Amino acid sequence: MSTRTLSASSSIRVLGAARFHIVRSIGVAGGLGTRSTANKSGAEDVGDVGGAEETEGGRLRMRTIESMPFQTYQLALDIIHKDRQENLKRIAKERETLEKLIKYKGLTHNDRRIVSMKQQIERWKIYADANNPRIKYNFDCGIISMDKPIYLNFLNKKWRQRNRPILMQRLETMHVIPDVLPNINPIVDVRVHFKGRKVQPGQMLDSLMVEEFPTVRVIPFKNEEILCTIAVVDPDVPDPKRDKFRYRCHWIVSNIPISPAQTTAVGRLAKPADTIVPYLPPHAQKGVPYHRYAMIVFRQPGKIDRATLEGNVNRDNFTMRSFQDKNKLCPIGASMWRVEWDSHTKEIMQKHGLPGWDTMYKRIKDVVPP
Amino acid sequence: MAKKSKKGSPTDIRVKLIRYSLYHPKTPRPLRFGTMRMLRHWTIHRAWKLYQAAQRKEREYELERQYNKMRDACEELRLTSPGLYARAVAKSIFRYPIVEFRIPTDTPAKNGWNHEWKRG
Image (cartoon, rainbow over all chains, first blue to last red; front, side, top):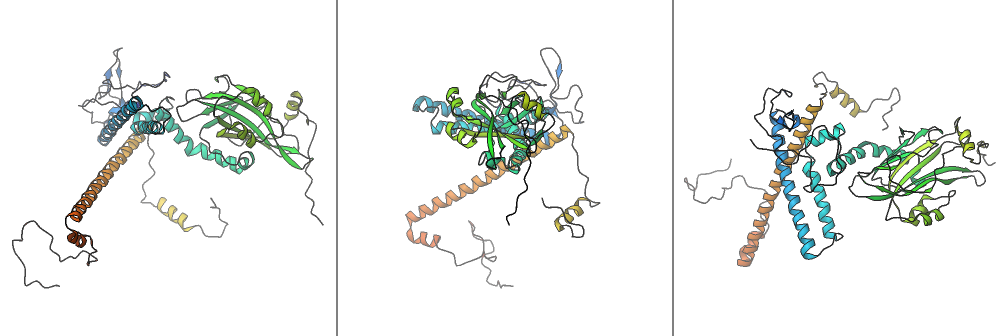
């Protein structure tokens, strides 16, 4: 009987201190989950089925996933286990070569070769755990440990399967993408919550709901810390004098530290960041069609000085493209919502002293030239 | 997805075929798995794919080794005897493998040469 564990730790070096809440503790190689003669009757919750073991408290602990008595399944587990061992060996060997290179050849961590070796190690870590049924079960139940790359990989895949295409479709259908930015490739999952309620991209919202700034969650899928900037722009401010629409900036927050462990950008659990432009409630005047509001999450190359940024930004006539170019930002995520005139808009505009609360627009039908 | 058809225009033949096979009385009903059943299915699928990938890789490596040996042998021949090398490397006059050819063997045949052999 081989002692074989399917442990979730794909890195031999312990990553970070983030403890995760789990139902069953996932062991690192230490003799847990001994396989005994499988109970062929198929019963999964019979007391002494292989896999039950004593813990310190003397309680029996079931490891159903590792010990389910189905022959093909157990053979599959064998194959997966062998593959995992090979992967771990590969990772260990590569790590050794990496350390030797750094020590004897004096290469730095920024060297091309070192960087590519590290990327390869990350990929192999994911391969090692990608076939583990326990990890799949954990992920499906919502038991996610944000410091393990395999869970980030699963999250990424899930996001890219449904929510990201929906976001891109909404951005393009509402023409936010050609208007606000020429193109965007979202890499992070951006979730916006107004007054605790989740906002779907492109959703029409009530003026009361958007009166205060939202809680923004930015979920990156790589285990590195980055600094982010969030900017909200309204591309539909009517300008009757020029018979056009203008852009207006509603909110900019900079120098937000984001990592898989720290996913809240703005909100209760967020780390302190610099508000460059304070939040202005979205207001659509009567008679105007709905306003679109685009939130773009940028990645900053480094820490940006607050004073310089504040001086450069003009609230009206704010162009996202020039903001991005001036500060060398890279767009990594987006979200959007829409706001219409409704019964509460007037009070909100009066409360915040926004001009135009008493203006109503009326569309002049296009006059056909004679 | 422009699937909307006006009343009167015929449905797409592909849609018709899909519906035919889907609702045929002999088609098995769609399976709905519980969590553990689905997990086992997923695990077995992943393991099978791993196994197949390993087999494929093994085949590819074997082919690569064979090719390398052939190339090295040809190189040896080229250095040893240019005449033989030219004949070995030249294009064969035979376009297809000939069924009636005898297979090269290490030792001669027990029955020898059949002088009475006729085609047909």
